[in-house]
Amino acid sequence: MVQILTITLNPTVDLSTATPAVSAGPKLRCTNPEADPGGGGINVSRAIKFLGGESTAFTAVGGETGAHLLRLLAEEHVRFTAFSVTGGATRQSIAVTEQQTGKQYRFVMPGPYWHHEMVDESLNAIVQAAPLGGVVVLSGSQPPGVPMDYPARLSRALAAKGVQLFVDTSGKPLHELTKNPANPYVLRMDDVEAEDLAGRKLPTRKDTADFASELVARGVAENVIVARGADGSTLVNKDGRWHASRAIAAEEVVSAVGAGDSFVGAFSFALTRGDTMQEALRFGTTAASSAVMSAGTQLCNKAQVDQLLPDCELVAL
Image (tube, rainbow, N blue to C red):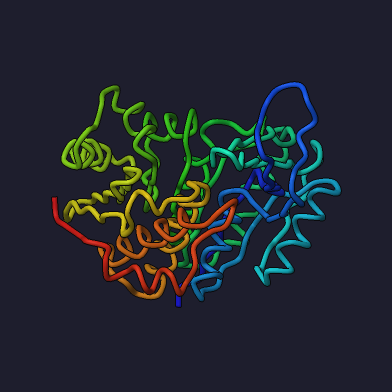
Protein backbone atom coordinates (compact mmCIF):
# COMPACT_ATOMS: atom_id res chain seq x y z
CA MET A 1 0.00 0.00 0.00
CA VAL A 2 1.19 3.52 -0.84
CA GLN A 3 2.38 5.47 2.20
CA ILE A 4 0.64 8.63 3.44
CA LEU A 5 2.25 11.62 5.18
CA THR A 6 -0.09 14.28 6.58
CA ILE A 7 1.11 17.83 7.27
CA THR A 8 -0.19 20.06 10.09
CA LEU A 9 1.55 23.41 10.37
CA ASN A 10 -0.86 24.83 12.95
CA PRO A 11 -2.04 21.95 15.18
CA THR A 12 -4.18 22.35 18.26
CA VAL A 13 -5.29 20.60 21.39
CA ASP A 14 -9.06 20.58 20.89
CA LEU A 15 -11.07 20.97 24.08
CA SER A 16 -14.80 20.19 23.97
CA THR A 17 -17.29 20.79 26.75
CA ALA A 18 -20.94 21.73 27.34
CA THR A 19 -22.90 24.17 29.47
CA PRO A 20 -26.66 24.67 29.94
CA ALA A 21 -26.74 28.11 28.30
CA VAL A 22 -24.20 30.58 26.88
CA SER A 23 -24.59 34.20 27.97
CA ALA A 24 -22.28 37.13 28.67
CA GLY A 25 -21.43 38.01 32.26
CA PRO A 26 -21.97 35.11 34.66
CA LYS A 27 -19.58 32.20 35.13
CA LEU A 28 -20.66 29.34 32.91
CA ARG A 29 -20.36 25.99 34.66
CA CYS A 30 -19.19 23.42 32.13
CA THR A 31 -18.97 19.64 31.94
CA ASN A 32 -15.59 17.94 32.22
CA PRO A 33 -13.67 18.85 29.06
CA GLU A 34 -12.50 16.24 26.58
CA ALA A 35 -9.11 16.80 24.94
CA ASP A 36 -8.28 15.58 21.43
CA PRO A 37 -5.27 16.17 19.17
CA GLY A 38 -6.43 18.48 16.40
CA GLY A 39 -5.56 20.44 13.31
CA GLY A 40 -6.29 19.49 9.71
CA GLY A 41 -3.53 16.99 8.94
CA ILE A 42 -3.63 15.43 12.39
CA ASN A 43 -7.36 14.81 12.08
CA VAL A 44 -6.79 13.32 8.62
CA SER A 45 -4.28 10.87 10.15
CA ARG A 46 -6.69 10.10 12.99
CA ALA A 47 -9.51 9.44 10.52
CA ILE A 48 -7.26 7.11 8.52
CA LYS A 49 -6.42 5.26 11.75
CA PHE A 50 -10.09 4.96 12.70
CA LEU A 51 -10.82 3.49 9.27
CA GLY A 52 -8.15 0.82 9.63
CA GLY A 53 -5.33 2.47 7.71
CA GLU A 54 -1.93 3.88 8.61
CA SER A 55 -0.21 7.20 8.02
CA THR A 56 2.42 9.42 9.60
CA ALA A 57 1.45 12.82 10.95
CA PHE A 58 4.10 15.50 10.41
CA THR A 59 3.19 18.17 12.92
CA ALA A 60 4.74 21.40 14.16
CA VAL A 61 4.80 21.59 17.96
CA GLY A 62 5.91 24.07 20.59
CA GLY A 63 5.81 24.42 24.38
CA GLU A 64 3.87 22.35 26.89
CA THR A 65 0.73 22.33 24.76
CA GLY A 66 2.79 20.77 21.99
CA ALA A 67 4.02 18.08 24.37
CA HIS A 68 0.41 17.44 25.40
CA LEU A 69 -0.55 17.10 21.75
CA LEU A 70 2.12 14.46 21.14
CA ARG A 71 0.97 12.52 24.21
CA LEU A 72 -2.58 12.52 22.87
CA LEU A 73 -1.37 11.23 19.49
CA ALA A 74 0.62 8.48 21.19
CA GLU A 75 -2.45 7.44 23.18
CA GLU A 76 -4.35 6.97 19.92
CA HIS A 77 -1.38 5.08 18.39
CA VAL A 78 -1.04 7.60 15.55
CA ARG A 79 2.48 7.69 14.16
CA PHE A 80 3.99 11.16 14.09
CA THR A 81 7.05 13.19 13.20
CA ALA A 82 7.45 16.33 15.30
CA PHE A 83 8.83 19.58 13.88
CA SER A 84 9.86 21.96 16.67
CA VAL A 85 8.80 25.61 16.45
CA THR A 86 10.13 28.46 18.57
CA GLY A 87 7.52 31.17 18.04
CA GLY A 88 5.35 30.11 20.96
CA ALA A 89 3.33 27.21 22.32
CA THR A 90 1.01 25.06 20.21
CA ARG A 91 -2.47 26.54 20.33
CA GLN A 92 -5.64 25.34 22.00
CA SER A 93 -9.14 25.50 20.54
CA ILE A 94 -12.40 25.24 22.47
CA ALA A 95 -15.81 23.94 21.37
CA VAL A 96 -18.68 24.66 23.77
CA THR A 97 -22.11 23.10 23.21
CA GLU A 98 -25.12 24.92 24.60
CA GLN A 99 -27.27 22.12 26.00
CA GLN A 100 -30.57 24.03 25.87
CA THR A 101 -30.37 24.68 22.14
CA GLY A 102 -27.76 22.25 20.82
CA LYS A 103 -25.80 25.16 19.32
CA GLN A 104 -22.03 24.85 19.31
CA TYR A 105 -19.65 27.77 19.88
CA ARG A 106 -16.08 27.34 18.61
CA PHE A 107 -13.16 29.46 19.77
CA VAL A 108 -10.02 29.05 17.63
CA MET A 109 -6.65 30.53 18.62
CA PRO A 110 -4.11 31.84 16.04
CA GLY A 111 -1.09 29.66 16.83
CA PRO A 112 2.60 30.60 17.22
CA TYR A 113 4.34 32.98 14.82
CA TRP A 114 6.73 31.51 12.23
CA HIS A 115 9.81 33.37 11.00
CA HIS A 116 11.10 32.76 7.48
CA GLU A 117 13.88 30.40 8.59
CA MET A 118 11.26 28.05 10.09
CA VAL A 119 9.31 28.14 6.83
CA ASP A 120 12.35 27.03 4.81
CA GLU A 121 13.30 24.42 7.41
CA SER A 122 9.80 22.96 7.39
CA LEU A 123 9.75 22.63 3.60
CA ASN A 124 13.09 20.80 3.67
CA ALA A 125 11.93 18.55 6.51
CA ILE A 126 8.70 17.64 4.71
CA VAL A 127 10.51 16.81 1.48
CA GLN A 128 12.88 14.55 3.42
CA ALA A 129 10.00 12.88 5.30
CA ALA A 130 7.76 12.43 2.23
CA PRO A 131 7.53 8.79 1.10
CA LEU A 132 8.98 8.27 -2.38
CA GLY A 133 6.04 7.87 -4.75
CA GLY A 134 3.63 8.27 -1.86
CA VAL A 135 0.88 10.69 -0.85
CA VAL A 136 1.29 13.91 1.15
CA VAL A 137 -1.77 15.65 2.57
CA LEU A 138 -1.48 19.33 3.48
CA SER A 139 -4.55 20.24 5.47
CA GLY A 140 -5.62 22.98 7.86
CA SER A 141 -4.86 26.62 8.54
CA GLN A 142 -1.46 28.25 8.31
CA PRO A 143 0.11 29.82 11.42
CA PRO A 144 0.99 33.54 11.43
CA GLY A 145 4.14 34.27 9.46
CA VAL A 146 3.79 31.45 6.93
CA PRO A 147 3.63 32.92 3.39
CA MET A 148 0.45 32.56 1.36
CA ASP A 149 2.27 30.66 -1.41
CA TYR A 150 3.37 27.87 0.97
CA PRO A 151 1.11 25.19 -0.64
CA ALA A 152 2.46 26.09 -4.08
CA ARG A 153 6.05 25.99 -2.86
CA LEU A 154 5.46 22.61 -1.26
CA SER A 155 3.82 21.25 -4.41
CA ARG A 156 6.81 22.20 -6.51
CA ALA A 157 9.29 20.87 -3.94
CA LEU A 158 7.57 17.48 -3.83
CA ALA A 159 7.16 17.07 -7.59
CA ALA A 160 10.71 15.76 -8.02
CA LYS A 161 9.98 12.86 -5.63
CA GLY A 162 6.94 11.68 -7.56
CA VAL A 163 4.72 12.49 -4.60
CA GLN A 164 0.98 13.08 -5.01
CA LEU A 165 0.05 16.18 -3.01
CA PHE A 166 -3.46 16.60 -1.63
CA VAL A 167 -4.17 20.21 -0.56
CA ASP A 168 -7.14 21.12 1.64
CA THR A 169 -6.81 24.81 2.44
CA SER A 170 -8.84 28.01 2.48
CA GLY A 171 -8.67 31.79 2.55
CA LYS A 172 -5.65 33.62 1.14
CA PRO A 173 -3.50 30.47 0.60
CA LEU A 174 -6.30 29.02 -1.54
CA HIS A 175 -6.59 32.24 -3.55
CA GLU A 176 -2.81 32.28 -4.05
CA LEU A 177 -2.82 28.68 -5.25
CA THR A 178 -5.49 29.43 -7.85
CA LYS A 179 -3.83 32.65 -9.04
CA ASN A 180 -0.41 30.99 -9.43
CA PRO A 181 -1.16 27.32 -10.18
CA ALA A 182 1.26 24.66 -8.93
CA ASN A 183 -0.92 21.71 -10.07
CA PRO A 184 -1.14 19.52 -6.94
CA TYR A 185 -2.74 16.12 -7.48
CA VAL A 186 -5.90 17.00 -5.51
CA LEU A 187 -7.32 20.33 -4.34
CA ARG A 188 -10.34 20.34 -2.02
CA MET A 189 -12.49 23.25 -0.86
CA ASP A 190 -16.01 23.75 0.48
CA ASP A 191 -18.90 25.44 -1.29
CA VAL A 192 -18.44 28.80 0.45
CA GLU A 193 -14.78 28.91 -0.58
CA ALA A 194 -15.65 27.86 -4.13
CA GLU A 195 -18.24 30.65 -4.47
CA ASP A 196 -15.74 33.15 -3.09
CA LEU A 197 -13.17 32.08 -5.67
CA ALA A 198 -15.70 32.00 -8.50
CA GLY A 199 -17.17 35.38 -7.60
CA ARG A 200 -20.66 33.97 -8.12
CA LYS A 201 -23.21 31.65 -6.55
CA LEU A 202 -22.95 27.94 -7.36
CA PRO A 203 -26.46 26.73 -6.47
CA THR A 204 -26.52 23.47 -8.44
CA ARG A 205 -24.18 20.53 -8.80
CA LYS A 206 -23.66 21.47 -12.44
CA ASP A 207 -22.65 25.00 -11.42
CA THR A 208 -20.10 23.55 -9.00
CA ALA A 209 -18.79 21.08 -11.59
CA ASP A 210 -18.47 23.83 -14.23
CA PHE A 211 -16.37 25.95 -11.87
CA ALA A 212 -14.21 22.98 -10.85
CA SER A 213 -13.71 22.20 -14.56
CA GLU A 214 -12.42 25.75 -15.05
CA LEU A 215 -9.80 25.18 -12.34
CA VAL A 216 -8.69 21.87 -13.84
CA ALA A 217 -8.41 23.44 -17.31
CA ARG A 218 -6.22 26.23 -15.86
CA GLY A 219 -3.85 23.71 -14.26
CA VAL A 220 -4.79 24.68 -10.70
CA ALA A 221 -4.98 20.96 -9.78
CA GLU A 222 -5.33 17.62 -11.52
CA ASN A 223 -8.41 16.78 -9.44
CA VAL A 224 -10.69 19.37 -7.83
CA ILE A 225 -13.17 18.45 -5.11
CA VAL A 226 -15.85 20.81 -3.83
CA ALA A 227 -17.82 19.86 -0.72
CA ARG A 228 -21.43 21.02 -1.09
CA GLY A 229 -22.39 20.64 2.57
CA ALA A 230 -25.47 18.48 3.10
CA ASP A 231 -25.61 17.73 -0.63
CA GLY A 232 -22.33 15.76 -0.65
CA SER A 233 -19.18 16.34 -2.74
CA THR A 234 -18.35 16.96 -6.38
CA LEU A 235 -15.15 15.73 -8.07
CA VAL A 236 -13.82 16.92 -11.43
CA ASN A 237 -10.76 15.93 -13.45
CA LYS A 238 -9.87 15.73 -17.14
CA ASP A 239 -11.65 12.38 -17.43
CA GLY A 240 -15.04 13.35 -16.02
CA ARG A 241 -17.29 14.93 -13.38
CA TRP A 242 -19.01 13.06 -10.55
CA HIS A 243 -21.08 13.78 -7.46
CA ALA A 244 -21.50 11.63 -4.33
CA SER A 245 -24.53 12.36 -2.15
CA ARG A 246 -24.47 12.47 1.64
CA ALA A 247 -25.69 9.13 3.01
CA ILE A 248 -27.81 10.45 5.91
CA ALA A 249 -30.86 12.64 6.52
CA ALA A 250 -30.57 16.22 7.80
CA GLU A 251 -32.12 15.35 11.16
CA GLU A 252 -29.30 12.88 11.84
CA VAL A 253 -26.67 15.65 11.88
CA VAL A 254 -25.29 16.31 15.38
CA SER A 255 -22.13 18.37 14.73
CA ALA A 256 -20.42 19.58 11.56
CA VAL A 257 -16.97 19.40 13.22
CA GLY A 258 -14.66 16.85 11.59
CA ALA A 259 -16.59 16.23 8.38
CA GLY A 260 -13.95 17.70 6.06
CA ASP A 261 -11.02 15.98 7.76
CA SER A 262 -12.89 12.67 7.75
CA PHE A 263 -13.55 13.08 4.03
CA VAL A 264 -9.90 13.81 3.26
CA GLY A 265 -8.68 10.92 5.40
CA ALA A 266 -11.07 8.41 3.85
CA PHE A 267 -10.49 9.67 0.30
CA SER A 268 -6.70 9.54 0.64
CA PHE A 269 -6.78 6.13 2.29
CA ALA A 270 -9.06 4.75 -0.43
CA LEU A 271 -6.74 5.91 -3.22
CA THR A 272 -3.65 4.42 -1.58
CA ARG A 273 -5.33 1.02 -1.26
CA GLY A 274 -6.16 1.02 -4.97
CA ASP A 275 -9.72 2.35 -5.16
CA THR A 276 -10.78 4.34 -8.22
CA MET A 277 -11.40 8.08 -7.95
CA GLN A 278 -15.15 7.44 -7.98
CA GLU A 279 -14.92 4.83 -5.23
CA ALA A 280 -12.71 7.13 -3.17
CA LEU A 281 -15.26 9.94 -3.59
CA ARG A 282 -18.04 7.71 -2.26
CA PHE A 283 -15.88 6.50 0.62
CA GLY A 284 -14.86 10.03 1.57
CA THR A 285 -18.41 11.37 1.39
CA THR A 286 -19.65 8.50 3.56
CA ALA A 287 -16.93 9.15 6.14
CA ALA A 288 -18.01 12.80 6.26
CA SER A 289 -21.59 11.62 6.85
CA SER A 290 -20.39 9.47 9.73
CA ALA A 291 -18.48 12.36 11.28
CA VAL A 292 -21.47 14.72 11.40
CA MET A 293 -23.47 12.09 13.29
CA SER A 294 -21.01 12.33 16.20
CA ALA A 295 -20.92 14.94 18.96
CA GLY A 296 -18.05 17.29 19.80
CA THR A 297 -14.79 16.86 17.92
CA GLN A 298 -15.25 13.18 17.09
CA LEU A 299 -14.43 11.95 13.59
CA CYS A 300 -15.74 9.10 11.46
CA ASN A 301 -16.42 5.61 12.72
CA LYS A 302 -15.44 2.55 10.62
CA ALA A 303 -18.46 0.41 11.50
CA GLN A 304 -20.76 3.31 10.71
CA VAL A 305 -19.00 4.05 7.42
CA ASP A 306 -19.33 0.40 6.36
CA GLN A 307 -23.04 0.52 7.21
CA LEU A 308 -23.71 3.82 5.39
CA LEU A 309 -21.60 3.23 2.26
CA PRO A 310 -24.29 1.40 0.23
CA ASP A 311 -26.56 4.45 0.66
CA CYS A 312 -24.05 6.88 -0.85
CA GLU A 313 -25.21 7.49 -4.42
CA LEU A 314 -22.68 8.36 -7.14
CA VAL A 315 -23.82 10.13 -10.32
CA ALA A 316 -21.95 11.43 -13.35
CA LEU A 317 -22.47 15.11 -14.11
